[in-house]
Image (cartoon, rainbow, N blue to C red):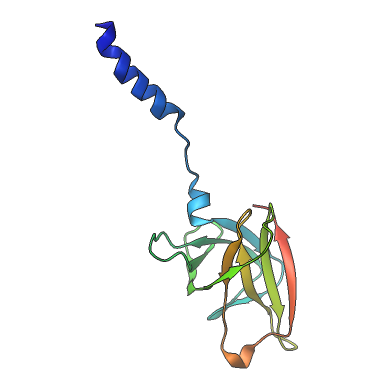
Length: 139
């Protein structure tokens, strides 16, 4: 009897010790707060807190979704361009670009903590930015 229970007990112990992947690591869920209006492709976000994450797709990891803070309203689904950096950081890095006078800054890049690859957001040629600012946020 003890021999019959040994293998199932070992399997259950192994499953209990298996690493658990965080959902945040798969979808890169990031909470960001903007203290001023920010342009994203297709619209301008009011100052506030937002959730940015990758669409749950194994085939395309460049689709970014932006939700309100409690994720009850989807503001945008954006096809981003892969972007790369030489050194990862331990914090989320958001890059904003300055627009013409009177226009809100535009979201340019987003890098998840520890990643070398991130997302670059594109805009029509008529709205190309002039200056870039880097923001580090807590995740």
